[in-house]
Length: 318
Image 1 (cartoon, rainbow, N blue to C red):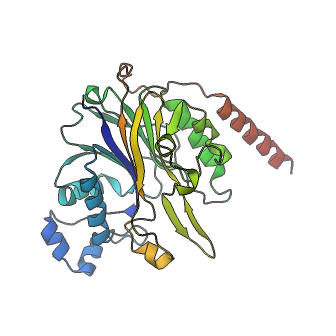
Image 2 (spheres, rainbow, N blue to C red):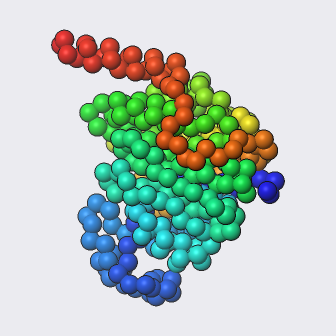
């Protein structure tokens, strides 16, 4: 096994690349913009701007990542086309088109030949987006990686009930050894500043890679938001490693910081890529054949469930 793995997580923001023919990159980029967009007629999920796609590819290739977890990908067709056209086919693609009501999925890119025998599975449960679990095999000491995209803070209760359930379910699935959780958490899971629904994750024997390398909370940002009279730069994206996984280096790939919505819209995504160099545990447990569930809910999850039950009773009496 190589001494370390170079990994990254990125929410590519409504990343669709649906084509009507087997174009080369040169042919694709020579198309008129209207012809390019006409290949995907969706009003809500149109094809992503080609310049932004090229920038995402440049970042991945320059980072020479062994593994990249991606959020908001428009299916396997998009991921495969991106790999073929923009990454030179350098990666194996993993994505299961399940769960997402918006047609945006989590997926993963694994460098070809790096993880022979790697396996992937979509985890069961009523997630708002799919939850992908990877077993990278002996070449990575059987490291397990979960790629997540938790419920956003939209809806009648800002998605709180669903997000509480998703956090509980996620915590019941992950192992405590040789494990990584990466993706868009859609909230603050910074230790000491966390929103309460993320307490079960912080109770696990894991730590955020940015925390592990000593980056102060006020300098951790992976998302730019310019709303109606509101500006927020926050860390919504995380890579959590179990305590036996050594974090050698970590950071967020950030260029020029936007000062308004117009500048933000020029970027490939409203999220930034978070990256880390990690060393899996040398004494990793044997692979567990991707069994559906391993752990009982810990006390934090039980308390959250109790709070939810009390709230439901109060609503029923109102």
